[in-house]
Image (cartoon, rainbow, N blue to C red; front, side, top):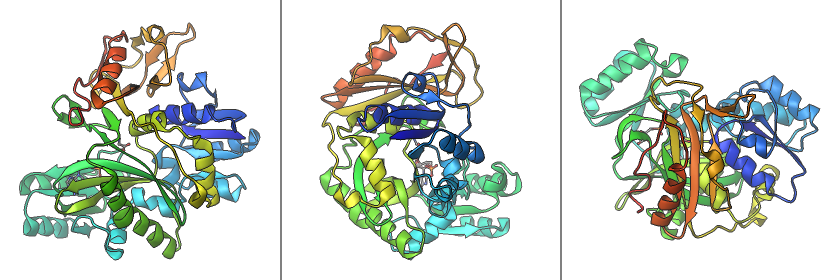
Length: 423
Ligand code: AMP
Ligand code: GLY
């Protein structure tokens, strides 16, 4: 098979790492890829958001399967366009990608199907939004309806903070068009976890659970980020909890989307709040693998990923089983000093050659580039995902940080407490 992976971050490096290992894969392309991916795949200079460019690249290289990493091209209809062109593609259609692309759509869908979630209101009118906030009181959560690169959520501890958030989003245009409509929802208490499942339109196959660290600094302090580290499995999701999540959330979502004429195909990333009494409730859906969560999932997956992706596209997941390594995978993200605010680009990363990669330790590239002289430089906020396996969470953590300490990058930083909850 010839496979094209779309995207160029740590998630796509991890997907390429797994797919390159498949005996079924004859040729692997990635658009646009990054220097880490370039060791595994032929990188094509096409941006993930360039729908016409991706369709043309898939055609030019006679690709058998396109695997779409990030949400933006999914929401923009890349899978619809590839399917129309007769090219198989892993990921949901634009209609089904609204599970991530519109928070209001998702809240209404969950309510229609009785899937445990938060009480909420949807508002396109600023004064009505404010009246709802005053009536509900705090804590309360304000969300821009559309895609906001993970930044359109304010968990407000006071009514004033929530009022300021809707002002910013609806009147101030803080998230452009994404904030013209807002969802205001109940604050959910509990422990957060992420759960991943493949869905082929009618059948859902559980993958694994993970937990990530969204705040920039140790102690879960500081601004929200795309994720500073993650680990899998998540101790809070034991086998019984995983079965509840499948029965109460994933299978009803699969059935509901099919019944409403927009069957979901791809990977569903369920953001959960887990309360010992109230059980698992949906915080949000994403319609793609998590980043960095994907990195650890791929290292824990013993089975060949490629047949599972094909079965998802072909609607044959009911015949599929997957085997997992029992070890814990832990990813420590190294980010550029200043992230998630402004940061310097072009700083040199040394020491990568000090690390010998094994099946138990991989440095996934996210925001890197390579100069003509071969030097690796940082060009993004989140730059590397150092991912290690270990027999226990503590071992995985120690292995990951031992590798981090060999990387020479003075302008980078990482959290030192990834996995504290599991350790
Ligand atoms: P999201 O971008 O939707 O993942 O939200 C970012 C973060 O806000 C989540 O990871 C949660 O920590 C928090 N959050 C979102 N919605 C809620 C909610 N209804 N209750 C409590 N926390 C929430
Ligand atoms: N790490 C969270 C995400 O991928 O959205």
